[in-house]
Each structure stands twice: as structure tokens, then as C-alpha cells.
Amino acid sequence: MVAKTFFGFEEILAKELQLLGAQEVEQGIRMVSFKGDKGFMYKANLALRTALKILKPVYYFKATSEDTLYRGIMSMDWSKYMNSNQTFVIDTTVHSDYFKHSQFVSQKSKDAIVDQFRNKFGQRPSVDKDYPDLRINIHIDKDQVSVALDTSGASLHQRGYKTATNIAPINEVLAAGMLLLSGWEGRSDFLDPMCGSGTILAEAAMIACNIPANINRKEFAFEKWNDWDNDLFDMIVDSLLKKVREFHYTIKGYDKAPSAVLKSKDNIRNANLDEYITVQERNFFDTQKDSSGPLHILFNPPYGERLDIEMERFYREIGDTLKQSYPGTQAWFITANLEALKFVGLKPSRKIKLFNGSLEARLVKYEMYEGSKRTKFQTSAGDTI
Image 1 (cartoon, helix red, strand yellow):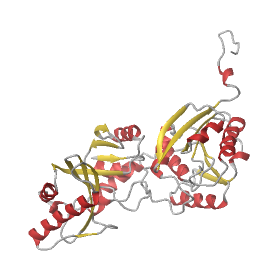
Image 2 (cartoon, rainbow, N blue to C red):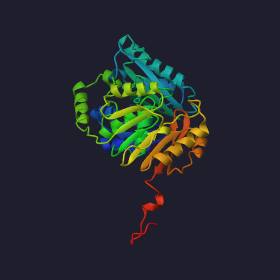
Image 3 (tube, rainbow, N blue to C red):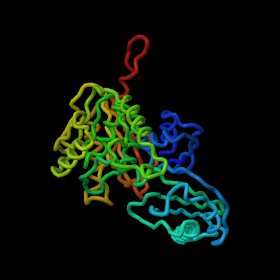
Image 4 (spheres, one colour):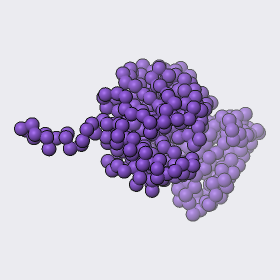
């Protein structure tokens, strides 16, 4: 199988798969390939936090022309995967000199499938772009054609808990990936000081408690397949829920917009996470750390593409607030405004290249020490240096 993901998440997705029990895990670009049985396919869709889709390749062939493409698709026995009363849709990705347009490939492949059913059974399945019984994925790289079944359906970032969104909400898979890259495991207090519609908070709580990422999702594509096994699926769900763990710290969100606070609370309630998370209407720049132990901060501040703010002043205030009011804190945030990072006034200890939608971004880490960083070290005689 193949798990698709965002650029920069390949390594953490591979680690997720290995921890779940996948075999022969191999990283690619924006994807990780692996092996597993039907039960593992169900488990991967339910539990993976950084996967966008799980594809199950079922056929490979070479094609260099319209005719060889048609014959290759026609040579598959499509009655194994659907019947003539069902519906399907084809998603195509093309990187080839032989085929220039993905829509043309989808159309030609559709013709081959329909013709096969008409020849065999005298009737044909129809195309349904919105709610198909079978979602087919065709990938052409040069002359290599891979035909896969989409096991997920809608992108796996659609967790099922978010009904209310704010301006430019962050993608759930992006939020989960940033949390995992930041090392968040639920072993300290957590704060998102600009929480918007609460996505980072919800994903942080699910990681902390080991709650399966897609437990709130309404459906997966494989539920419409001929070999759908409801009992096996229920067994996988039960086994995952038995691994949910207790969380002994706090997860807090702030936002200065009352509407964002309401949306955030709604989404957190929908995810059944309100016992772990509190959200308050507060301006981060007027706050200070209110706990004595370590604090993990991760947030997605607004940048020029999304909101009209005075960039230089805003990012300077982020740096000043962290420096003056949040000692003993690991602070991470993502921004696509790379110029604005100069105004934070702190030196990041890490910078990770990611993409937020089509925007190239950086996930940056700032370490706020208790007192001065220099006083952390003492000589054997006890002198501070």
C-alpha cells in the first residue's frame, strides 16, 4: 500500500507506520510505501495522523500511447472490484512525456472500464464524482502506469470533528505533523496562544491520549467495497481504543476573537475532547506563563496572505512576549512569511521547511530558559559559569 502525505512529513509517517506494525516501510517523496493485510488497511486509515490517503495498488503496466493505456486498463478484471450497478470515479496524476493531460487519461480509462462491463454483462457502471462506490487512482510516471484503489475516500485530514472554521484554518494533518515534529508526546502542559478554530488543540489532545486520529470520521471508501468486513473493522476499532491513555497535564488555547473561541469550543466538543482542553478569550501579548513546570507551545500565527496585520510589530511582539513572559518553554510556530522571522528578535534553535497549502513555510523552534541560559552550567566547585 501507499500512504500519501505532505512534503516534510515522510519520516514521521514512516515512523507512525512502523509503530502500528507495518511491514517493508519505505519512504518516498510525499509518500511512504508499506505492506499489510486488510485489517492493517483499516487500522492505517483509523490511526495514522500524518497520512492524507491510503492507496492500495492492484495493477501495473506500461503505456506509451492512448491505445496501450486503453488496453492496459481493459486487461484488468474490474468485476472483482465492483458490479455494473455501482458507481466509480477516477483520480489521475501524470508525470510523462507520453501523456500530457490527467483528464484525458481519466476519460480513456473510464471508457475501457465501461466497455469491459458492457461487453461482459450488457450494462455498465456509471461515474459519480461526489459519492462513488469505488474511487480509482491512476498514476503515470514516464511509461509506468500504476492503478490503485483509494481506500480512504475523502482526504484523511477530514477527521469528522470540525464543523466550524475560522479564517484560513490549518489542515488537521499539517497540525498533527507539526506536533509530532516538535516532539509533543503529552508529557507537559501545552498551549496554543492563537488557537483559531482549535485544530492544533484537538490534535495535541489526541496525540497526548493516544486517541486514533480518525475515530470521529463518518466513513471510509473501503466500507463500500465488495470485501468489506464490518466485524474485522469493529475489532480493529476496539483494539485501538484499548490503547487510549490517561493525560495528567493541561492543554490550553487562547484567542482574542470571541467568534474563534466559540468555534474552537464547538469543534473540541465534537471531538469529545473537552475534558482535556480549555479555551479562553485572551490576547497572547497580554498573558504570561501560569504554570511552574515545562510548557510546550505550538501555534499558527496569522501572516499577510491571510489577515491584514502590521507584520513587523506583530512578530516583534511574539518574540517579546515569549522572552519576557514564558520562561521554561519550548515554543514552536509555523509561518509562510519568512521575512517576518527577522523581527522576532530571537534565534531559532530549529527551522524545518514545510508547505502550508501551496505556500512554502518554516516551522521554527525557540527555547525559553528559566532565568539566563548561562546560569544552567556550574563547575565542580559549584561556581556558576
